[in-house]
Image (cartoon, rainbow, N blue to C red; front, side, top):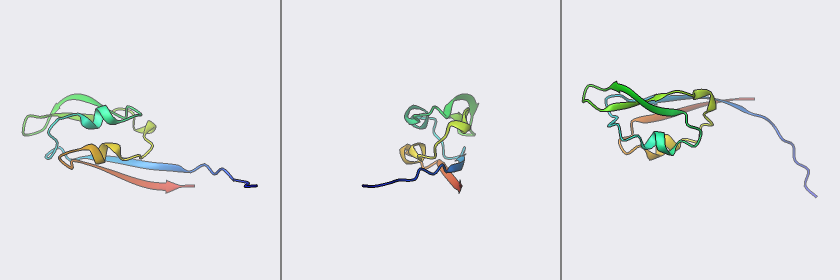
Amino acid sequence: MFLGVKAEVKIMVTILIDEEWCRGCYLCVHFCAKKVLSRSRRRNPKGYTLPELTALEKCTGCESCEFICPELAITVEKEGQE
């Protein structure tokens, strides 16, 4: 018989969007299960409309936005706390 202990770990997440690299494809917005990112009206110097962070507190740090970005414009930084 296995006895498990459930520990709650809080993760602090920072999502960095490189505005110079972003091409406004919004794959990050569509693939975020927690709806952390959304469309914005802001544009980068190249004229592409940028995503924005609207609910960072919901982020689980899954990194799907970072992995799906074809331009490598998103970086997810995590810092764990117990």
